[in-house]
Length: 328
Image (cartoon, rainbow, N blue to C red; front, side, top):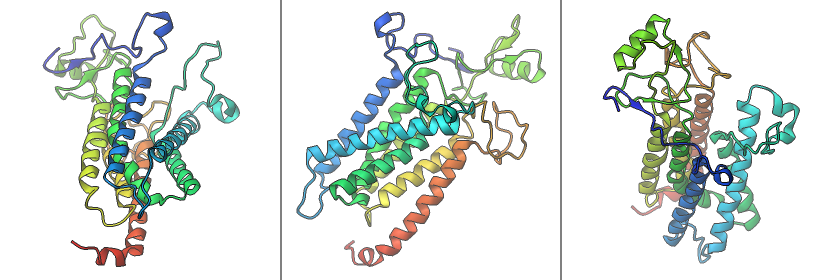
């Protein structure tokens, strides 16, 4: 370790058991999904035990909780995959051959899994899944949505840890002492003066090298902390102080959108997409040159914030009489 930056640990591999033929398909990212869903289920059960899902004299059963979260997970995964392939993939392949969206093999027949998931697609899919389940089982949607959205962030933390263990979705270059050199990140030519100057500033050796890997923001960990742990802590505190059903669910959407919007300034956009809106279309992606350069994620987060605030205002008006007569 260098005090001016951190080398990504060499012992971390995407595979849990690298080099073992039959276990090589087991990846940390997939395991993190198991932890994420397990954590969300555990918190949802705890909330049910506190009465958060009770509706008058009707109590939520364990079967209700399991089928609710299972339905949400299925819809979440479908939405995440569809959104990732149709919105974030720029090749146009999946628009031409939509049956490949859920095909887990490459053209050579090698198993690749469903590589590529979109949070915002998962958000939409999960939302549709919750609405579908509540309609089918005649449950109050906003009440169940509140409980689910309190459970989601802590589980989401594991997803971003999975991204870190995969060495993907890293941030922009930085001189911060906690910057990390990710092995799969873009290298920069030492023929450029700014690269030499930057490397010297953080202590990265350049002598005898044509290309150099520079430290970057560990944006996956920023997201795990703010969109995961901190957002969960806020909602966990709010759960016993909510004024109306839907307040927690919409607070989650607004809070996630807020944190993610600003963290996107530290996270490098996908190279094949770049900025959706830019003050300077030629601005590099590896560093932030303007707060007016917006990524796809920022636009979607803005829509989450705006939509949740509008919905919050509508629910406030609808529940005005209940709020005014609620005992302090």
